[in-house]
Image 1: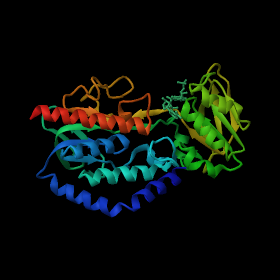
Image 2 (image 1 turned 90 degrees about the vertical axis):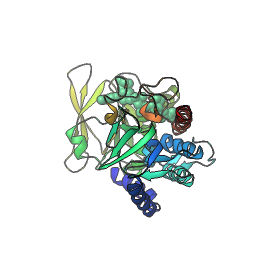
Image 3 (image 1 turned 135 degrees about the horizontal axis):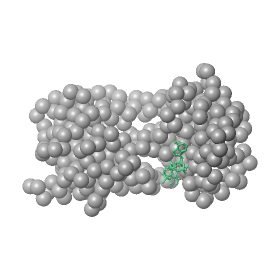
Image 4 (image 1 turned 120 degrees about the horizontal axis):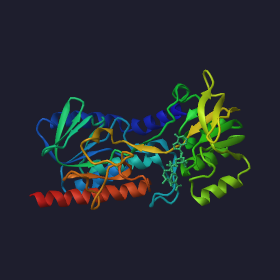
Amino acid sequence: MDTLSSPKRAAAASETGSKRQIKHLDSTVIRLYAMYDVIIIGSGPAGLTAGIYTCRAKLRTLLIAGIEWGGQLMLTTDVENFPGFKEGILGPDLMDQMWKQAERFGAEFIFEDATALDISSKPFKVSVGDGVYEGRSVIIATGASDRWLGLESETRLRGRGVSICATCDAAFFNDKKAVVVGGGDTAIEEALALSKFASEVKVVHRRDELRASKILQERAFKDPKIGFVWNSTVKEIMGKDKVEGVRLKKTDSDEEFEMACDAVFIAIGHKPNTEIFKGLLELDERGYVVTKDGTKTSVEGVFVAGDAADYRYRQAVTSAGAGCKAALDAQRYLEELS
Ligand code: NAP
């Protein structure tokens, strides 16, 4: 449940908390005088990798890390597919290492959210609350957030049986009944993670075939604890103080029915965190930043990396690679300017 995720984020932060404070105070003073070569917005693998590269290129770099710094990996446990860690590494530990690596090369951090951007003239200006920071270039690495169904009952019961992270919360539902909503890779991974604990897992999908990769589908179909409820959407999550069931509606008829369960895991995809760029940069119809010629955006001097532009791969390692590319593109752009 969310209640588990937050302490995890907090635990990852506790070791670094005092340093963060100092960094923030430093940057508050610095902002009155400083012009940055690069302002990076976002601190997942894309943003932090970009920071490592720009700092090593001796470009003065401000990293606006966000209140919930570290991105989606802060909400995961074992990461087993990031090269270099034979035994795997915990998501928050990986992000902590990346943060320290960027800091070692001189990145300056603000652990608050960027609130506005002025890219209509140069230098670019990025607002963080009352502070305005100027940069000769900007790298957007704001990532993506989980999509929710948008039901009142979903919000009310979040952390009380409603979750978006089976790796975080599955153990709470030992021998209980769980529902997973969605039909993509994430939904099937959630179902497989849950089946290790739950007595029964039902995947509720709005169509009659999965979007998930064949290999994951095969695993799920073979798992005796996992069942499927096809052509159905969730109309309501039932329960006053905790999840007690779901009311479902068929997508191919008007039929509605109820199903008892103790947990509902929502896995219906992600949306890019690009709200503040609307009207300033070209975005596609789903809100992803449109790229051209590598990591360039529709505004010269503004680059993008990671899930804010990538709906396809969305891996820590691809985001880190994109962060490297954006840093190299920014470096080249700045060299050509001077
Ligand atoms: P996704 O592929 O976009 O799938 C979202 C699923 O949720 C789809 O099945 C979609 O239904 C359903 N959905 C969307 N909105 C809904 C709504 N309002 N109500 C009910 N259902 C809804 O998202 P994802 O599974 O998070 O995966 C995103 C990307 O990450 C993919 O490229 C995936 O391959 C990758 N990924 C990879 C791995 C892995 O390789 N191990 C693990 C996780 C994710 P429809 O099918 O009808 O559209």
